[in-house]
Image 1: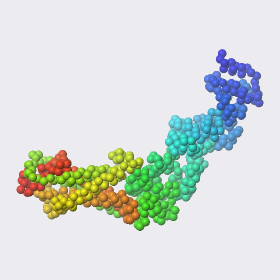
Image 2: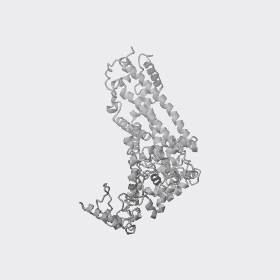
Image 3: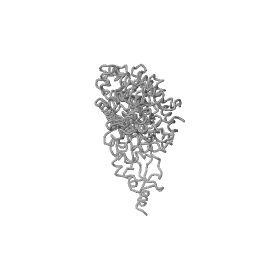
Length: 638
């Protein structure tokens, strides 16, 4: 017979003890032995040392186990509920019984949290102020997580929030607790014993009560919020007005400095403010313009924010954070009297001389309708220009691919170099910088695109896209200045290029003659001339004009502080529109026009290597020879 069995037998044979004589020591004589269990094998061991040190160590066991009136007691006892707790903790038990947990247990859901589930081992409960207590603030998340991380339980009881504990552990509050400081824990927001469902108006997490709940720790922010347009709307009963959790989240509340936070600089416009202010339903209900969000998203500030630039202005930079007020409020950051100071935080001197233009694109604002006109003009210009280029090149291509490929006759000796070495360097710098400008520029406009991702990924921490774009712009302008300087100092180039690129009546005749040749109206193409043909002139002049337009508008946006200080506020709006649509026009012109003549033209395919060695293909040389060579180089149509 084992020592435990002997001890149990002696206890059973001992004379019965009355309730007055039952002490904790008497109970621990059996239950204090490790391995002590019921006949069915259920563990009944209680650590005597832990019990004596617990908050209930001075109480006899019969305080909670009132059913025991003598020893030895009955083999099966009733499960201890909340009734014994009410003897000393009546207020807490009363609150618990009306809570979501207490009501769940009342209707038979035994899995609902009880006193012991939160306070820990019933025989080793310590004060909640003790770090060893399961109800201590430092252990609160782990205590609640025992149930609220259970997906089966969430599904069984239809708990709408899944894995809240895991979300909380990623929050700024949890990190504060982990660092040993008292950050907000579950009970700070949900309550202690009186935890109610969020749909209960008395709940601390009921929507209308959320600001006051958060305000227990953030009193100054609460005061600012209550004076804001959102706080006033909430006080009037507007159920859609945002409260703390709508902007910051519920359990996974992150610092605004963290990129994944919904109130971070790069996400606040789209993910937070835009959720309400871009809603058609809410705009109809409360009478605000939903287009303002999309207008901001397409502005320079919005584009830079979408590309990951954390230092660019966002909604809160202008409207405030918690103290958002109507523009008519004298204390509002966007009140006309305060707008210059608001913009001046980033752009010193903005609005000092001229009125700042509309930011969100009001239909009555000068910048808005001017930008709309720019868009309309450019769309027609792009359609007609690029469409005409495409048709012209398609006709040329269809004619040449059907022509027998016998190759041009040899070029007469003594032909000069078409592109000198300096010109080739200028072209190379322009070719490289233009490609970089196109990529980095459109990456700003379409930052969510897959092809922009490798560059945009570094925009937030390093500003790589913006820096690369500006460096490429300087390189391209430098190449252009070098080219102009060379034209000014070289008489031969000045005569050849400046005067050779001027449009003439002959160019118009050649254009119509070429179109007639494409349409088979004439048998041979017209002679293009000794210097440059109409295609080269159009491309060169368009490039020079486009470079000036892009440089002027680009500098207006680059040096925005000076622009806003000395020019009206609508200038950056119009400059942004012109810069964007001119970039589209230039990029398509390069793809449709320039690439055809230097790559896809059957006469030069796979490439016109003039940009590399300075000597054009034979066919291009023969095109510029006197007209007596036409019969040799330009066969008649069959």
